Image: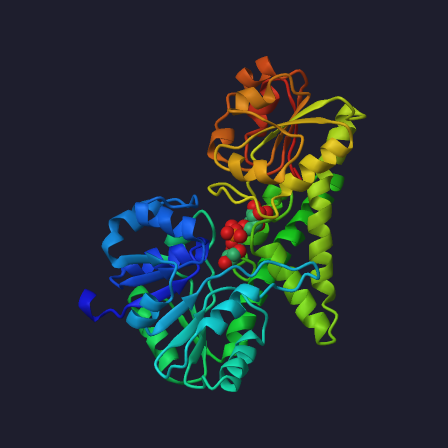
Length: 428
Ligand code: UDX
C-alpha cells in the first residue's frame, strides 16, 4: 500500500502543517515540507520539533525517512502534485484575515497543469475564487485549487488527524478534488464533498458555532451565580439532549487560542463587508471579553482593593496541553490585575517561554508552590492536570490569603474548602 500512496507537499510548518505532514507520513506518504523560516527547517532536520504538541515529536521521529524539509519550493513541486497550504492567516487590525502569506504562496507557483493548491489554512469565503482569478490572469489556468479546511484541536491534534469527525473537500470538479479524497480515504471518515465557497464557510461556521456554545454556557454560568443554581449540573442536564450534545458546555474564563477569536471576528467582518450585520457573533465576542474580566470582580468582592495584593495565576496557556499563548485569557487577566495595582505571580508548566514574550511585569515562578507563596488569592487559569491534583492542605501552608478562584471548574471544591479556603468556581 505504501508505494501506492502519492507524495504530497506541505507549505508552512506550524501546528497545522506539521500535524498534517506527520499524519500523512504515518499513512505512508512521502511528505515534502516547505517553510521560509530557515531556523525552523534546520531544527526539524535535526529532529527538533519547534512546537509542543503531544505525540508529534514521536510521530515525526518514527516517520522521519518519509519527511523531507526544505526552505525551497522546487523539491516539493518536483515530487508532489498536491501542495497543502498551512501558512498563518492571523487577524489584521481591522479583524479581517491577513492573507499575505497565502498570497506569497500563490505568487510563487509556476505555470503548471498537474499541480494543485490544497488550502488547509482558514481563509475568508471567496479566497478560493480570488486565487482562481489570480491564476487565470497570470496564464496559470492549469493550476488546480481545493479547499480542505483543518479542524484539529491543539493538544489532541494528531488524534484529530487520525480520526476526524469529517473530511471536507471543496473543489471545482477536476482531478485534484478526487486526489485529495483518495489521500484521506484510509481514515474512513465521513466525507463532505462540496464547492469551494461552501467548504470555506463550513470551517468558519463550525468555529463560530462552537464559540457561541461557549459564550452561551458562560452566560448561563453567570446567571447560575446570581440564582444559586450549579452550572455543572445544568450543563449535564442540557448535554444529555442529543440535539444539544455534551461537548463545549464547560464554562470558564473565556475562549482563546489561534482559531476561535480570529475566526469569529473574521466571519462577523465577512458578513459586515457584504452588508449583513451578524448580531449574534457581536454578542459572542462581547460575552467572551467580559468573561475574562469577571475574575477581577470576584477577587475585589473578597479582597476589596487589589492595590499591593499578590495574586497567583496557575496556568497561562489558552487551554491545557499546549504552549500556545495566542489570545489566552491570562493575557487580559494579568494586565487587568496589574492595572488595578496587584502584584501578579504566575506558573505554567509548558507555556512560560511563550508567555514571557507577551507579558510584562509578571513574576514567573518555577512551580505552582512557588507561585502561590505569600499570595492573597490563587486563580486557576488553565486546567493543567497538576493543578487538579494539588494538595490544598499544602497550598494553605504557603498562601497568605484564603481565596481560590477556579476559572475552569477543574478542582474539587470540597477539598479546597476543607483546607480552609473560600472557593469560587464559574457558575457553581
Ligand atoms: C479550535 C477548534 O476546536 C478546532 O476545530 C479548530 O480547528 C481550531 O480551533 P483549539 O483552538 O485548538 O481548536 O481549541 P479548543 O479545544 O477548541 O478550545 C478553544 C477554546 O475554548 C479554549 O480556550 C478552551 O479553553 C475553550 N473552551 C472549550 C471552553 O471554554 N469551554 C469548552 O467547553 C470548550
